[in-house]
Length: 267
Image (cartoon, rainbow, N blue to C red; front, side, top):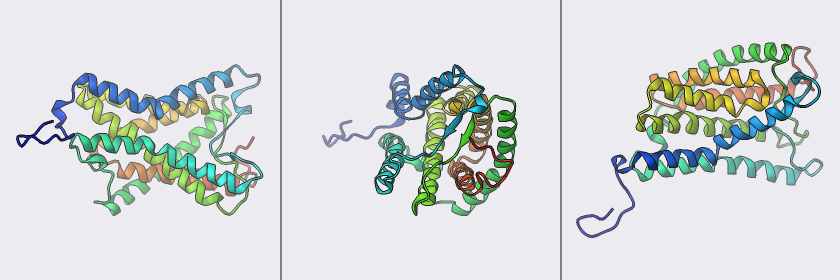
């Protein structure tokens, strides 16, 4: 855009983005992140279905070693994976900033309401976590889900810090892209709230399909709840907190309890 003084600036108002540009941008962001993960999860699920034996006899590992027996190299790969997974979030922040939307702050991902976000997120995690665990155990027992192994890292000093960082990374990527960014773009494209909710929830379920039908349905329901709360609160901060707490409890809890309690499935 050229100003009256003849200067050229790369900022523009949201109205200047055509529907075609919005669609292309959204598809590219998804192709670089969770959309690609959804395709990968579908391929993985097909492989599990066509493999001899039931789904519950197979395992889906979430945090595994990249270099067994080489802890420093393994740590380097773990940190690289966490950092590189956040690049699409930085891309979203850049795109929203360029169009004058205020970056991630536009979707309520900031420190303006830390205690409110923390309180709401903690309560949400408590409710979803208990229901989610019960649903997972039932789905696996019914043969609709693989055995989920939240972590299989070696017992080294960086194990728990990496698991916590991985949980935070998951929460930031998913909530920024699947809720804050996607809903913003679909609203701009004229989608109805119900259609946008369905798209966001189906996307969330799709990239968990590698866990089985239970993982798909459970996360899709979680997606519906998260979208409805985001519409009500106008902030993804509480959703990021809730998601991070859910994953931290799952990852760290499994590391501490696997093989020590009878109710927790292991491969």
